[in-house]
Length: 151
Image (cartoon, rainbow, N blue to C red; front, side, top):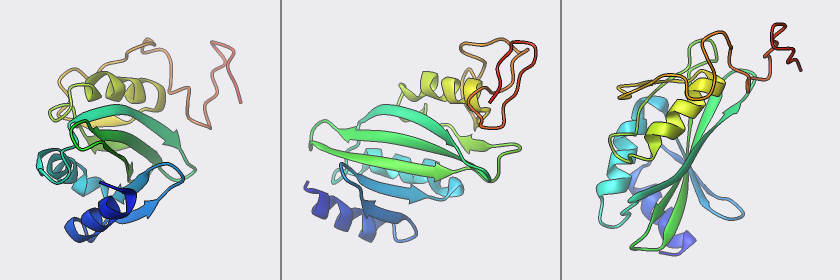
């Protein structure tokens, strides 16, 4: 599917989503409450067939944290960047996508460990790199006098 065809398909299938063509990928932003449902449809719909999660990362903003998923259809040869904002920064929570794409399990643990995003229904949500004495060092407001890390 070309970028234009993918954009048209996504626009018709997900009218509540924000869809745009970035420099390299089609990008779609969905509400946190719709994340799992949209992701499941993207994986299961034969027109989309996003069978592979390439990566997942988190970005800290002043009033929310954004989680970014790079999805690929290996059979149809198209890519999508799926984005979702948390509701605030104090207690960021999203639904896990590890039941859809097993690669999400460790990526979600990394985002939890470094940014503090909790993933509902994750099978093993615990710190991946750091112990519990650390805060969330990729947050822009992170200061840690014990480990001498500051911004």
